[in-house]
Structures are given as structure tokens and as C-alpha cells.
Image (tube, rainbow, N blue to C red; front, top):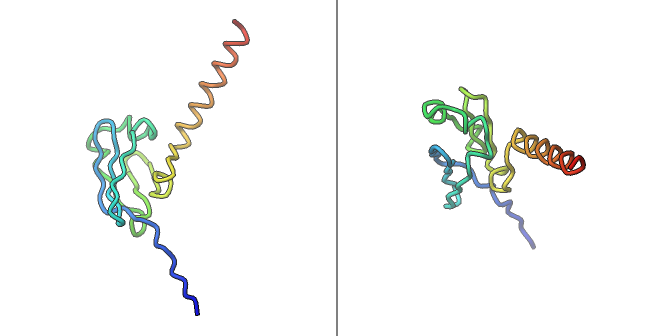
Length: 103
């Protein structure tokens, strides 16, 4: 007879935000550090706004109400920056390509 146990996804236990980094302690013992440049809303936020966060659900994510930012633990673990950052990178790449064509 076989049994299957679903591995629980890690959840956030605590959050620390500095001027340039987001640190998250996870339920599986890992500590995750992510650069704030991945999250422009947090990067532009004041220190007070960065410290005003709350967990989403049971720690599946983190919400900053003052800057309307929501991050999932799964997304951070996968190394996925915010859509705002990805869009900005795509725009910059397109501008560079246009500039190269006109050089």
C-alpha cells in the first residue's frame, strides 16, 4: 500500500525590509533575500510604508496596503520580479533595439 503526503509550500513567518532588500523567513527554515529593485513600488516607498505590511492568508504572500503591493512567497522563490519591473525591462530592451537600428 502506498500513501502520499503533499509537501506543504513554504510560508512566510517574518518580514524585514531595508533600503535595498526584502528579507523573508520561511516556515521550512530558509531565509530569502530579494533585491528591492525587483519591486519598484517598495523601492519608491518610504521606510514607514515598507514597514506597514501584513500576511496574505497563512503566509502565502505579503501585502503592503500603503503602496498596494502584493508578493507571493512562491513568486519570490521562483525569482520572479514584479510585472512592473518586467515591463520596464521590456521597454528598455525595445528602446535599445530601436536605437541600434538607427545607429
